[in-house]
Length: 339
Image (cartoon, rainbow, N blue to C red):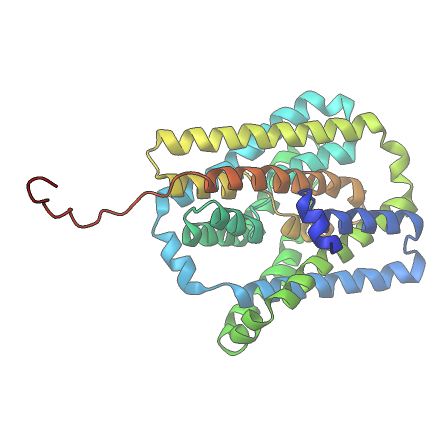
């Protein structure tokens, strides 16, 4: 049985193996000196390419269709950029004495990130939810996140006495938004090519994130920050990530039912509102926190990413098992007497 099928059989995401291998490679062979400067330039180029391809893939028509469902979009927005940050502020305030400063910062940063795109849409599709609304919600979340994530980061960190460089917003615009807009503008010319080679593009997506993760953890190893992280701290972060996800899933499920959404819309709200984007989070952290313990800062979102994949895969299968509602058909013909 091929290795990939073996992993799928046991519910293991191959990307999880790739992430673990990348962290191990950074621990054994961290990039140093002049190589680190070259790696920084490669990271900038890889992230720009990532958002360029994202812009080239995004269908403007799908976004417009999804935006008409404003109640659903508002619910997801509030879960992503209001509920999560409030929970993060409560958790980090209570547990600040028990965690290293960079892990606390990373946990708070994770809570202000936008939702995922690919996995939100994929799980919504598997669960037979409202896919166009999921596409719109996740895409708009990432676009808005380019602006609102730095703002929320500044607001929440300043309340904890951490300074923030607003020049990072300009860097995000140049490194993330400009390539995205370029991809959108060129979509009429390269959209068909992107669609035909979606698997290759997927490898570029994930490869870009692996490169950023390798650079971040290499810097952490060189700076010696891992001596500050104990098994207790890692276990605590893992537990907090799991608790955050559970609270948000339960909250979005309850809210969608109380607000009278259909089952298809509920699925979209739960999957889009409970996720945080590793693809956006790692590049943003690289820009927002230069020269800091980036490896530890991105650790909470890396752990959360894997937890949300496992949990949402299970939930999507559960949703998919629900009976398909039969469409009303023609009334049966009257039977003759005696039949």
